[in-house]
Length: 247
Image (cartoon, rainbow, N blue to C red; front, top):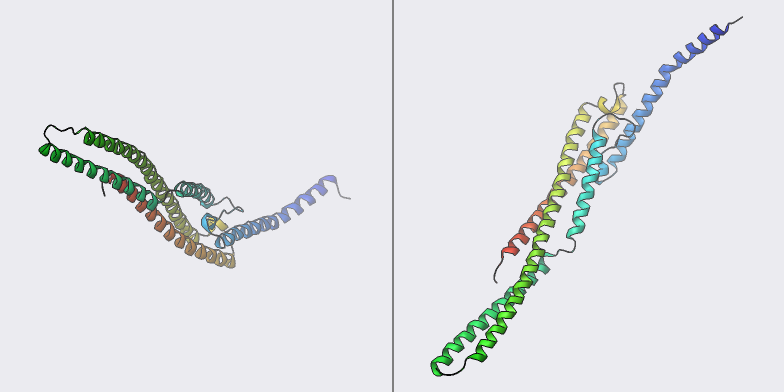
């Protein structure tokens, strides 16, 4: 006849016997989840190329993904800010104003010459009509200068907007570079993400996924660098346009 103490011992022994199996299943589940995370990342694009490793808390990739998502959001925000800032349109506006100002100054120079010629021929004659016309043109020039001041302020904002876009893209590109270093570490030390008891087939799947992710990120880093330099170049164009004083 079994005692209650004996029953308890048998149950406890049975549970202890099942513990290794439970731990194995738990680890296998974590492996599978981690591998799925990396395979999903390999099939994605943008910041989703950075694995979230939702099945494991190991490694810094999840926090890197979170930071990259914030940076990508900043890039989109800065892209929206420059959508309406067309350099060719704004440059044409400034050139037109400078051309108009140049013409008015040339007209004034012509009128001053007319005054000089008139006085030489008519010393006692009135030059009031000429002077009134000069004042009218000077008033037009003052209006043009006000428009140029307002346009230059807009050009300054445009230069800053493209500078912000270039910086945002640089930050994201540098974050991807940091991720690439971590992926290299992960490939050489898979235990960081797979644990210490992974199988050879798990390692192979893990390494293949990382290779695909690295190739895709390198491609995107190149495009980000191209777009970053483009934004910086447009910023420089606007800055030069602000300094332009004549045509």
